Amino acid sequence: MTEAASTSNRMLERVALVLDAVDDSSASASELSRRTGLSVSTVHRLALSMAEYGFLRRNDDGDFKLGHRFVRTALESVAQPILTELRNATGETAQLWIRRGERRICRLTMDSQHELKATLPAGSALELPNGSSGRLLSHDPEALESVSKHGWVESVGRRTPGLGSVSAPVMLRDQMIATLCLAMPLSRVEASPGRDFGEKVARAARLIGTELETGRQL
Image (tube, rainbow, N blue to C red; front, side, top):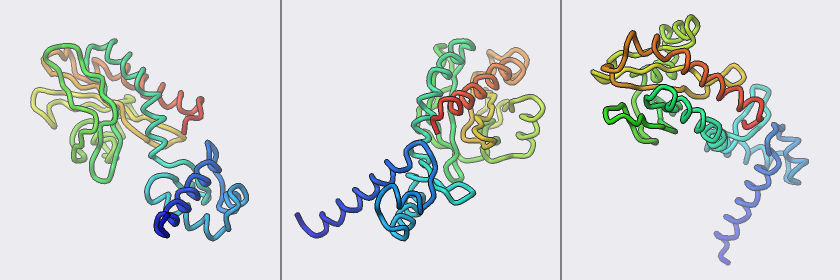
């Protein structure tokens, strides 16, 4: 084994030690040091680097816990059956969006079974703040006010003419971690996307947050 390969393996072993030590709880650098057997300075430096790449995240008190790369996996696992149920109940496309920098990323989509439908494949990226989910993820004041008042925010042909959507925040411990969006052709809307479907979307978004919290997925 070359020296470079040996060094790489040692680093991976340390990363695995830290991930195992964090598990589903949070821990300080000194506690991670105790659990891993690594020095405090080494584990602190390593944990900070892992946080930069999303393998860990740091709480307000400085403790470390699993980062968004694992959080998103848990989020998607919980959200998928809820999105499927929402799609089946409404007949329209249900999507889960997260923010990444100045864009929003579609993590899950359950497409409408109508021939005419609003659809984007999972992994699609859109610039903020377009659309109801984009306005929420960019913390648009009017969108947040609508959520405070109704539980949802709607968009009527603002991003794409002929299409509408209604979105609600997925909350975990008072933080918006994602948005749940229902998108549809305006030709099938009776009153407005929000008045037609907002309550169902808000209820589904709350259910995702509740199941994440009670299941301790994050």
